[in-house]
Amino acid sequence: MLATVVVSLLPAVGIGLSEAMAKIGLPEWGKYLLVIPITAGVVYTGIHWCFNKFAWRPLSYLSQIPHIAGEWNCEGKTYADDGSIAQHWVAQLSISQTWEKIRVRLETKSSISHSISVALIPEADGCWMLMYSYMNQPKVGNLKLHAHKGYAEMRFSKELKYAEGEYFTAKSRGTVGAMKFIRRQK
Image 1 (cartoon, one colour):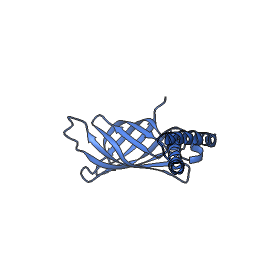
Image 2 (cartoon, one colour; image 1 turned 45 degrees about the vertical axis):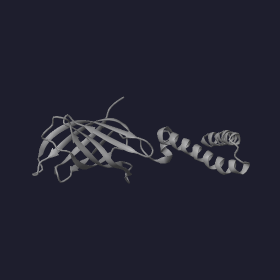
Image 3 (cartoon, rainbow, N blue to C red; image 1 turned 135 degrees about the vertical axis):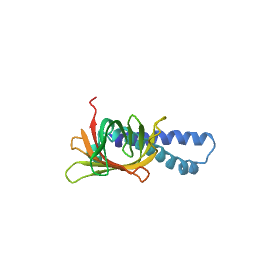
Image 4 (cartoon, rainbow, N blue to C red; image 1 turned 180 degrees about the horizontal axis):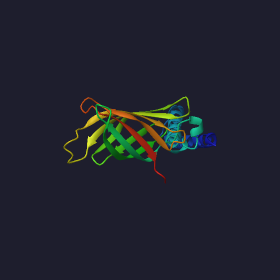
């Protein structure tokens, strides 16, 4: 079906460009020199945009990229230096995803974290590992917390209903902990 759309669009775009070039007085050879690359570029860009935004999801069995986008609840624990739990916390997690990009946003009562770089890696047992670095910014009025960077690795269940993993923060904060993501029901 996609091939049919492409084959149908190429002549339509090409004819329209060719007629526009003729109206401005471009010679015949000039039309082809410009029309073919412009037509191919426009069609490729359109197909790529559609695939990136929409088509990859129903075709994910071909691309083998799981759909983890959505709203998640997060339960977290921060560990003290002796390994005991120093703090329990909860957060709201939002994952946005296209074929090319994944973004992670985590919001607690005191701060908001945004992913800087993200990788989604398949594991041998069929699960997926989400690895991301992030920048955390305290909310206005929170004087105890300072902006910091961190890193997290979250292992998703095969059904993609939950993920469990660990995080650590950079030297300015120096904390470690564990998190669990639970997909919210729609």
